[in-house]
Length: 318
Image 1: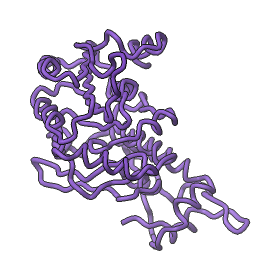
Image 2: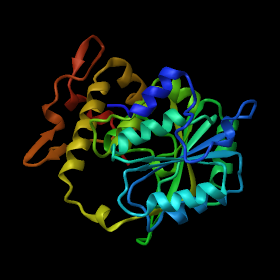
Image 3: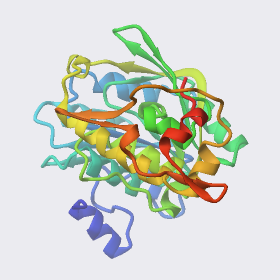
Image 4: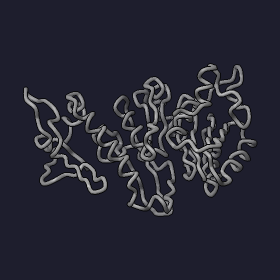
């Protein structure tokens, strides 16, 4: 269910008047809309949110609005954000008194964005000072690209996280091919396609969202590290049944999409060869393991149906 205040704004045809902790400077009559909308969902982030906010306020690129939604936090998150909002008019703050969930919060952020581009900034991560400038320059120079991501440096566990430079739909079957904390979107494309976060997903909502993007638009991942990604203790656990369930649901959607002739031609035909033998698990959910061999015929070629077993030599994953 979409947030009530979003519905009321749409019905009035007004741009979120009266919703913010302070009147946002960028929507006053005659004002120029910002180039970038920085979007931050926050929930119980009092330990790290100040550092995350400052990493955006200290960007070399300054033509942005900074939209922060506190999603019903029970700690001092709202108090900290208000302090920053009083000092910097680029910050727009919405304080949800009740937790609405990450997907609905992200949808609200998309609805509120007025910039040509929109970039995510998670409440516990740190953006490099040149992040916005570098991504804006890239999108300005590459109009055929709708989303630009980048590499991340995980901390305190030192690990470099990189996604495929030019991901294809097949890449998303194996893993999310966009690091959500690094993404900057061309909002004209996102809004024209009506792309939304699935509110039925309690986690992995970004995986589903970027899969829906890659079906329609081009994505590019820069090799540069533009975000320091904080690895929290809770995310280190590999025992997460809810995450496994959501990932399984998304991979099922990807397989259904790949069952079309058009998807096979555009996503499998150009790949290099890799021979697979034995069993290839699609995903494991509790005690149920589903194998690629069990899927029905996938596509037609030369007048007959080809089974997935026959497709194996055409699939590459590195």
